[in-house]
Image (cartoon, rainbow, N blue to C red; front, side, top):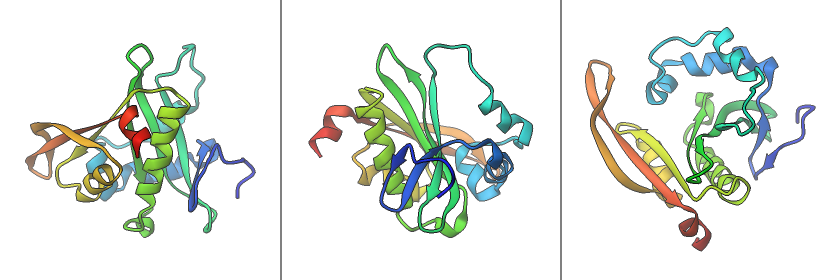
Length: 182
């Protein structure tokens, strides 16, 4: 593994702190057409914009916690994940992840990453309700959310413009009490 210990350790993957030496790789992921379409990155991301994630914040309570997604067997960064838009008063947040390396798609890595991230949000950050937003054509993410206990709460009709047409956004949520019952 890298010279950094895993912050969260799973079977096939681990979450490490973001690594400033991987900024160019993060920019590649964010700009890859078949990745950015579902992350709604409609403008190109520069390395300088990604570097801003590493600038220190003056806020006492951060509104996001971000990780690098590390493939343990292959010893490489393959994506990133995080809990963001954290509302510490209502104990709610959004979560999301990107597997930026296409060679790792369809291997259930997203499911393991989701489980680790949800567990972290509920058991360490004391979040009560997690949300995720999924664009309607992203069937892999829909399946992953539903297989991990998320429930579709809303459909935002014609919410995003992709490849010349409007697509719906599905709003999913999971309550801490539902997760703990699993």
